[in-house]
Structure formats: structure tokens, C-alpha cells
Image 1 (cartoon, rainbow, N blue to C red):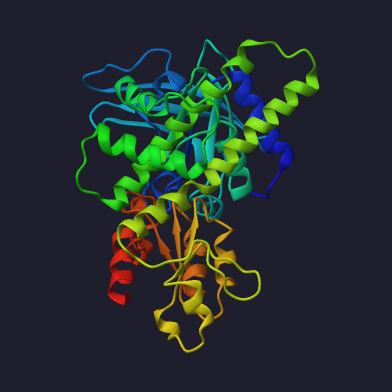
Image 2: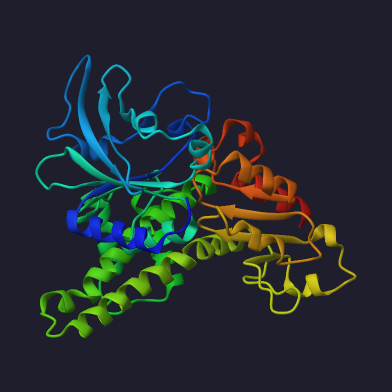
Length: 392
């Protein structure tokens, strides 16, 4: 599916008009790429009110309903939303078959973002569905609504993204109290780690899990600071369209800026905590600046320093296409590494990465979102840190 600006604009407009939607990254299980014979996209019970009018409470059996799907490419067809009590599974079935998706199309959609938007505020029967399979589309949509995907999915309501619990939000509010302007993005990352670690009274760190938790918490931190900073703007009316547009563009650009630096800030913290030498960003040939260069830029530019002891790490939230950027960022490092939060990539892309000598580093909880044939080849954050500590 090619990048289509009009399609993206239509999706954002439809989502805003509806005020609620469910979206998730498609896993091999969802597309059937793992060999499963089940024709269904797994949903979350957190999204029950997007697909059912009343919460399923059956002790046995199933609850199901037919829904109409209006796919962004013009296809319209019926699907079936079903909750299996025995399996505690919630799926939408007959989607791929009734949508007449070919097997190759489905395989290429691993890691794509699918969005279900109810077309009625009262009855959950008709849905506009968009599938985004480029990083530009995924980032533009998710950052427009400031969504977090640490659990692979996001449920958006008119009152905002569903957060953990009110008591946890209270902890975040305690730490962000007094901010009447946006702090530096590194400060927001620090507040997020502090809020999570203190609220859950954590004394030890599992970097694979806690990196995800810190980034998830940061969405809450940012939204609460955003609400405080913009409260006057949201109460006072805008008297001309240009003022409204300027404010909206400024708010959206700030969301994108924060999201773009978040992962780097947390990786920077992990390396510092582990006493790992690094440059962030590094500098290699010319103006090339990889996200992380280990042990330092000076070591890289010293031709007497053994190239086998150099490590180049890209840090990209999504990497369906941008992984190729990492390949050209340091000629002295033949085997490069890329840390990503991307939840699933097609086998074809993973094979390309392997052939290009790029080692993918993915938080361990996300490994199951990848094709089974490649899961053993993925590195966890723990694996990467072990590799680095053996060198330095």
C-alpha cells in the first residue's frame, strides 16, 4: 500500500469526527502469516465499547455480531465481531477473506497499523477502516492523537487515550505540578522514569520491560503537561481561523518533536546507568550522525582503533523503511545494530536486514509480534547490553 496523503488526511478527519477509534499493529497472528488457519484480527477487551453496545459478560459460549466494513481503498464488506468466553478471545473475523486480500498482501501487512473508526456515535455497526503501512503515515496518525502503543494497541475516546489508573495519574500529576511551560524533552523522559519507578516501588530494572513502561508513562506525562499549559487556550475562544490553525499546528509539531526524541533519551539513560561509553549522537564520515556511536566519536575517527570494537546503534521508534538509513551512517562498522519499538515486520524486510548485516534489537515483550521464523534471530535489549559489556 503506497503512501497516500489524501488517505491519511481522510483518516484523521474521520477519527476526529467520530471521537473514538481502536487501532493496533498487525501481528503475524492477525494476518495469518504464522500459519494459523484462523481468519481473525485480535482485538482488546479494553475496546469492547467500540465494537459492542454492551460489555460481553457471558460465562460460557460466544457473543457475536455482524458489522459493515468500509475499507479506505473503496472495498465494502461484512465482517463478524466475536467474543469467545472459553478462550477469553475477542476478534474480528471474515475480514481478510471477505475483503479478498491475497496471501502476499497479508504477509506484507505485518507491522502495519490498522484503524477501526465507528461511523455512528450510538450504534457500533458501521466502520471506516484504514491500514497504514509506511512510517510517515503511521507516525503522522499516531502523533496527531498522541497515542501510546506499548501494549500493541490503543483505544481512543473523546476524553482521550485510556490511561492506567487514576491513582497512577495522581502520581504523575504530583511530579508535573507547577509546569506552566513545556520542559525540555529530556526532562519529560526523566519525569516519566521517576513516576513509574516510584509508583511501582521498583528497586531493580528489567530494561526490556521497563523501557516500554517508561515510554508509555511519558505519554501520560506529556498529556498532563499539555493540558496544563494549554488550559487557557482551550477555554478562550479563537476569534479568527488563522489563530486557531497556528495554535493547532504548534501543538501538533510539539507532539511530534517529543515523540521523535523520547526513545533516544531513554537509551541514553540506560547506557549512562550501565557505565557504557557512548556518543549521542555520534559523528562518522562527513556530516553523518548515527544516533549512538560506541565507545565514542574520537575512537571512530582514530583509524588505529580496532573497527571490531566499534558499535553503531540506530534508535528508531518505527523502522519499516528507515532501517536503511542506518546502513550508510558509518563505513568502519560493517555489522550495524538498530533498536526499535516496531511491533512486527514482514519476513521479506527481515530477510533484507539480515542480508544487509543489520542486527535488529527489540524489547523482549515484542518478539512475539514478529514472524516465528525470525524470532530467534532478534536481540533483546538484555542481549545487546551483554554484547556491549563484553567489549568494554
